[in-house]
Image (tube, rainbow, N blue to C red; front, side, top):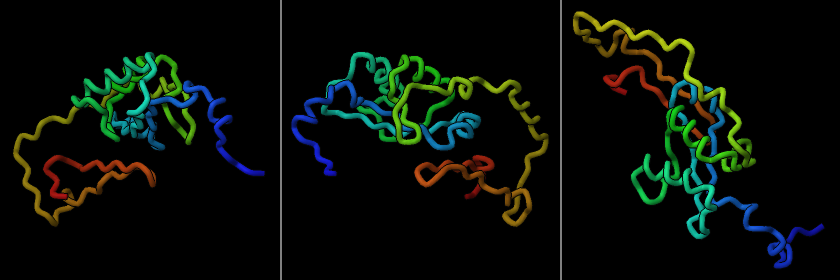
Length: 159
């Protein structure tokens, strides 16, 4: 059995079967959505004219990035991802498990039922020494071999 892409076979494929835009979802989508920080890998075929149905999606990406072309990676909040899914209008541009398909994770984009209560501000400024137990809080690392998310304990953390 031979596999070849003959001219006849390539002509048989319609241009609609190969989308000009693909948004790769991370394998840790549920955890990333819970953190309100979802990383997307963006593939955009610049050579092909985009499908008219993709114009709203491309407009959102351009507005968020502020560049004519979207970057290869972008981090979105749940609200932004909800807007992106609505703009896609069921088009199969979201890639998950190596296959493109329409958005199918509406439950992940809902806001958490009970947001965590903000911690009361400290009355006395805290100074942490490098060797103190509070300064050795672990980093939160999440991801896979293709995606990596690192959350520091605080903005003042020396790591």
